[in-house]
Amino acid sequence: MNRSIVLIFIALFSYATVGAQGIKFHKKESWAEIKEIAKKENKLIFIDVFTDWCGPCKLMEEEVFSLQKVGDFYNQQFVNYKFDAEKGEGITLKNRFKVNLYPTYLFVDPVLDEVVHRSTSRQAMEVFLYTGQSALQADTRSVFMESQYQAGKRDPKLLWNYAKYLQSSFKRDELNTLVTTYLDATPTGLSDSLAWRFFANFQNGTSTPQFDELIKKEAKWRAQYGDSAVNEKLVSAFDYDISRLENSGIYNPARFEAAAYEKVTALLGKMEFTGKPTVVAKGQVLDYLRTKQYDKAAAIADRFPEIVKLDQKQVLSFYNSLYFLSRSIEDLSWMKHALKYVRYITMNDLDNRSKAINHYNYALFLEKYLTLCNTKKQVPDIGFLNEPTFGDKRYTLMSPDLKAKPKKVK
Image 1: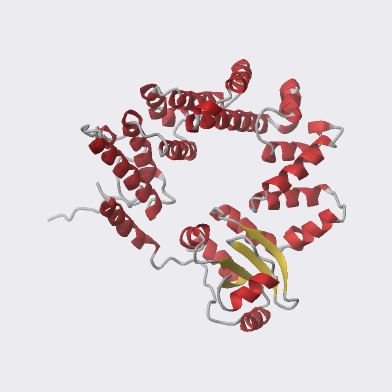
Image 2 (image 1 turned 120 degrees about the vertical axis):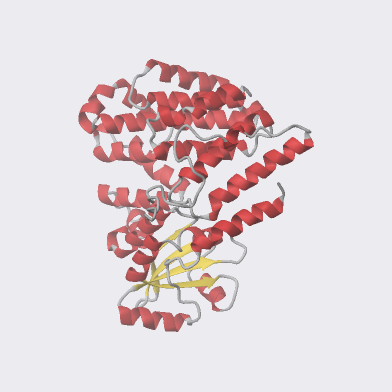
């Protein structure tokens, strides 16, 4: 399979984005004209600041701006405008609004001619909708929150909204500073409801004083915050540490932190909580990958849909993580298994089934596998084409809810 076949995959599936009812941008008007339009409609101006060499900018345009749900919201709430930061009037506007990252999203008051909210980076649909929703409320706008925080205001509502903003705009260092400072300065620990929310949503891993507090007083927190909240935190904390340590060892065996890994897995072994079997299964797959026991890794990965009781969101998330790891593993004995998981994604990721990206990933990985087989003069193992045990059985763009066309009665 050569590059031309990959391009055919793209051509076959890219048609699905044609005619998508996404964000309708003004592109030809001057900045002065855009402001007048926004004043008449009594709306903020949403600006997508991009460059023609920015990959995430292009992905946002193709994968997020084109979505019906995104278009419905942004077209109703804002006057939408975009400019290239390196061409024409865009150069002046970029400098005026102090843009130095791409993509950058600006929300401008047309009367004041000032930015009231800004964000950046490639964002998933839910995050991008949150970005727009935040611009509509005065107390969740970034400019307001930053000014309040810098002035020393620390009320819980401000801190929570500001933390969510920092997370949505991928300002990890600032978020970590805010969260750590608050947690360390709270004398009542996790009994403080905001401390718990910060801990549960923004603090990763098991190596923190707050996680130690969770373990020591687990029954108390279950009574105060509920079993579901505690279970979710335990799952995310162990999952984060195990994945981080194992992935590091897979990419670079010399960097594997054996002592840290043994400490985390020993602690996990002593605990019981809903979701633990999932954490253990994922960890075992990664450990077998790191130690190159590929058939054992596949034996567990194949059963993962059953382990998580066919929770498709969990399956797709884990299989996607395996795909990204597998791109760095050039071993035919694993690649033949990984193809099953990449194929599963194309067949079961209903939100993206009709888009090119998953099919492109599948075609690219298949090409890599076949090329390596040819190089090593090995016959390809086509077991990945067998009917899957779980999920959709068809490789198709059609919805699984589509009924068969009735046969005409003669």
